[in-house]
Image (cartoon, rainbow over all chains, first blue to last red; front, top):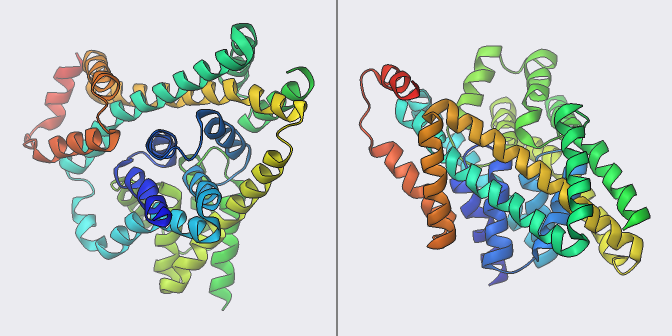
Length: 175
Length: 190
């Protein structure tokens, strides 16, 4: 049963998530935290933070880790399969048919229509992270860390790996 | 045999060198696939990318799997995917397993607390990214209306986000194609 749930938890976000891996993050969170309760908000955000310090696609890192935590090696394989296989198989099997439609106004509309929803989902996720952080370390620390990260990432274009590493050092020493 | 080794190396490298998730590492794929190994021409590559973007799900694995398949069939597809995905999955599992083992130590808890606001900021950046892209297509007014609509559906009525997306996709398919859709869009943006 757990394997079936793992399969569904990753199949659904990846079948509706237009816009690549990042668009899938809030949809996976919805399944994993809200629907199945496999991880708490805080565990999910920790996982996301460390996943962001590592290279490679984000969707498969999340799937692999959560699948492994919930169902060991079979869970890992099922979660990765659900993430990667369905749309890849569609792409390979329906190639010539899709080639005809890839520039059609309908297909272009589909990926455009999904964006506002993804924006709202990502925004809600960001809000949840800040809310958790207020509860854990209070407003001063949260605002301080958030403001510095925002400046580093947006203004000075510091690579995210260094920003997260900086937060890790700060947290280990002062929190 | 050499082709399998090449596929493995190409997608192992793109998996380990690409930071910031799949979409930001597409230029690395281009470098390996078009420039280094010449498996595809630039046109074929951008066609495949457009095709991949027309489908849901992560883009990097679609590209890796599809290119692997084109170059060396099912075996090539599997090799490209595994080389692309497995190394970082294993790293993440090792990383978090060690962290969970020591999660009662105060300094490990400090680490876990300090990274949350940073991830919050990163999600905020992604949010802004998608808002800007929506605005480019719908214009500001419609984007704001849609954002409020989605918020109400999700937070007040607690509709599953996949259902909401499915509804919007259906609307995109059912909408009649106007002969001059571009002109209509320009008027909306004014």
